[in-house]
View 1 (cartoon, protein in one colour):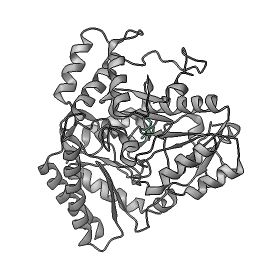
View 2 (cartoon, rainbow, N blue to C red; view 1 turned 60 degrees about the vertical axis):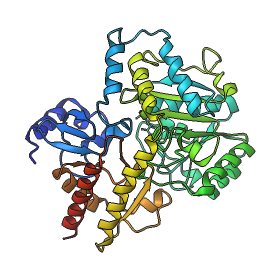
View 3 (tube, rainbow, N blue to C red; view 1 turned 90 degrees about the horizontal axis):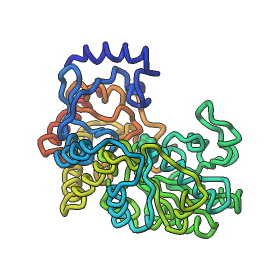
View 4 (tube, rainbow, N blue to C red; view 1 turned 90 degrees about the vertical axis):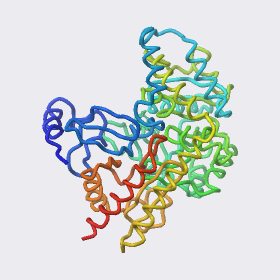
Length: 429
Ligand SMILES: *Cc1c(COP(=O)(O)O)cnc(C)c1O
């Protein structure tokens, strides 16, 4: 496989775009090599400027659960585009998508559409602070909620007093309002509520952690978050930007039967176009302007193209058998990888839930950020380079999940298992 055109474009891109990209992980920094520049996607496949074809396990980082260029989505986008691309005025389409979202996820009684997951989480926290009249929020180490200032804090696991921003440009004074707990550790959250009684507005969590690699929640963990927030007059915010409409039609909250106060969505609900959303109890959401005093606005919010792509994507996802198909496809992949691993003497494990999967290069018990951060990222980098050469477009970081779509066929999965097996044997040598 040759990457000549991509190499030249990456050189040129770096003259005009910081790092040559518009979002850091795309630059392949943590795995080495250069990122292929893409021109086309169809079904489970993605094609680069050098004419290489890959089976795509990034799927735009989650939105493309139907695969690339799904005909029903594309046709609808084209039809709506003919009528105009943006009005900055209300449309009936927004009511349609809002009804679909509130029906699928009953804890969302009202919803506001924005342009990204970042906007959704940022505003959900503003709203939680306004509603509770408290300033501090709790997040988890290794949890990613977009790049709003107050959320770029990782901290040392559970070390409330050391909430230093891990990004220059975020004022320390501001970061101090973000407390960091460790995932799957209810005790670390309880300690924060003890240290800061009456100061915590909200706990924000990815109910299924997928931004430190995939780490499913332990059964009692999410329940403990529900009860401790309720007891302390804080809101529970589920960041379901990945898990929403991914693990099933009702998201992680349906899977684990937990009702958060606010939910953030993104990715899938835009069907591959830019979108985000936050929603929850009517009483809380009524504080959002112009219904209430909490300001949040957006020139392109509720954009007709994005909303249409979302509606069509949800139309497909609401059909019977869809999530069962995703489960079958992904369990096939999981089983194949497990088999490949079992024949090798390597410290590797597979973490999988629904159509999310991470291959971890560590034998640590995987529960939180500390346990994954010991993974062998060099070995992962070599693994990734091998896969890319073999036509498998795998997430270019140890700490990301692979996304499986409805377009992935049995043949795609078998090819992938073979290539993963070859890649693992190669890097073993
Ligand atoms: C992707 C992601 C976000 C941010 O969404 P953007 O649209 O990239 O701003 C927030 N939370 C989670 C859990 C995500 O995976």
